[in-house]
Image 1 (cartoon, one colour):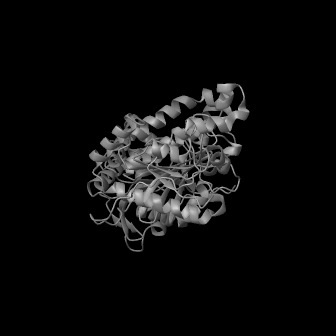
Image 2: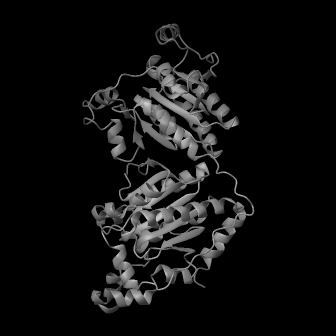
Image 3: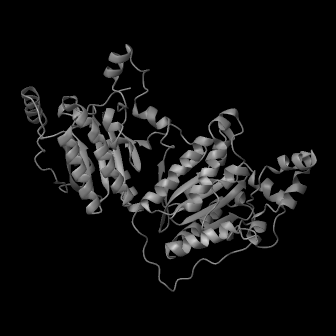
Length: 499
């Protein structure tokens, strides 16, 4: 793999920002104690790099939208962060927060500046605190990890983005390879600290060259624009029950198991006007079997968590997928975006690895997070709704269900084996358990049954567009409801469901 050359800050900013839009926020670096040797090194770095510190800060525009930027300059002492550089970053983050600007950080650094020792090391906490305040204010923080990003930069402001992407081939890791070899007598395995490897393990969301960064950032910022106001006279979505005749429970279950039934990826292709895929839990797990993205359905932007039925045939949903889902819930809360979940699962992973990874606890945490989430929530029961994997993404302000979708604590064959010792009685058990969309509607667990005419697999495009339109309508209607009123209604509904 070719290793990129560390790009200069001016080059990156000219690539990413609109022409002639950058305005510097930099002031002369704060004074720090130094000996003559360090003073000479700083002066040489200024002459070599053409900047006065290892970071450049300011404001520009991306596709016309204002954005604050913090950009490393690797040519200045390998982009190392001392007290003066960290203070410049903190001031820029605080200004971005005060002016309510999204923040783009582009890192390229060897980490903490060794000439300044412990005090420079401690300033990692200062930067982290400022970014925490920025994110708590509901403002986006986007990170672009460039070659190389290591040490204290990767372990603080480089790893806190709402969205984190990296330069192709970039060296990214906690301990620089030279330091590792010096301390341990051997290098790390080849490729462990490359951007592509981090993406594979769900630690970053994408690998993008610099010339594609502006486009992705513009789409993310556009997704955060509030929807156009809805007239007060506009009617809220009406509850829509099942249309007779309803399928039998067993017919519905068989329909959702058809290999050609549209799933979440077909839904997004047909109904979403934009989708920005995200990846992984951020904790070393890829979240296989779960689609995680910022999505726009018409005028409604949202964070979407969707169970991919086809991927689950190879990799059943495990704890990593649920931890990825919880990252998505947190992202929605931090950015103030509605959350949409799409449920279509034959069930969670049944394995020793899933048990040891805390599957049951992650189901419980998903439920707790969803119940308490302050943003509007919509869940879509698209097809199969088997067990805890389905329930983990179900609680919401509004629940939609496809006509032939269903929800059950176990596959009906498993329930029949428990009740009668005979899995061939699955159809009988499914009918008795009230698993159908219509049954759930009558029990108050589903608000809207989306028609299939007569089967989603026979009209995939039309069905997916119908679901997308229903999601858009529900999200926009929920945005009109005062938060306290919506949360109280959700709590009342969930606490007394079925009574």
